[in-house]
Length: 254
Image (cartoon, rainbow, N blue to C red; front, side, top):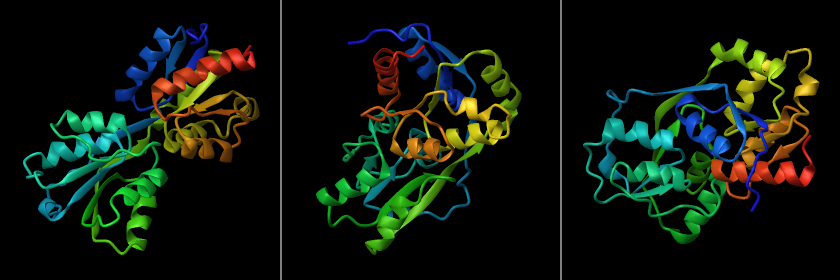
């Protein structure tokens, strides 16, 4: 197994509360993380939301943020007859921190596979609650609607671009000689381009290899013009680091 990132400078753009874990992985693998968080996330108050949790058979979580914000506000509810589905093991880890486990996790950590595999195993599932963020993709909503199922959505957190980081990001790109840019969601790609898209050297920036946590994030990067995208087989930050190592050695990154 390749062990080192060989001192490469790697831009970490994920939200601040999650950046340290990613940076530690990069450091432990011999890389130099440069943190510029481009998103900010806050829980949305659900005090006045009329939501009868007991009516649901399943609750779907597609992010750890969704788990944390949901249980901070609904922890006192009775979940004994409810099953949980999470998009991946990191989301399940957040769920376990509140004392629950996932009955279903898809083989690939994205909404398309989650919907496909879930209904292959549970074709009669109904009464589903989707816990979401304000800019979450609507694929699961579309899937449940087309299946004519009883479901509801609960938007428990808000993601916004952290545009206050504009000056820092521009300085880092201009001065730090970044070797790789990492994106852990389509939103980080969009936030990056919101700031850098009008810079005079944007074409040069788009030639910096970017490492995307999954295919949806990769699609966003390609849409904005990034010429080299790297995607791990398993959509985790650990595998992103392994993909960076492989790229450095296989492609001869200078």
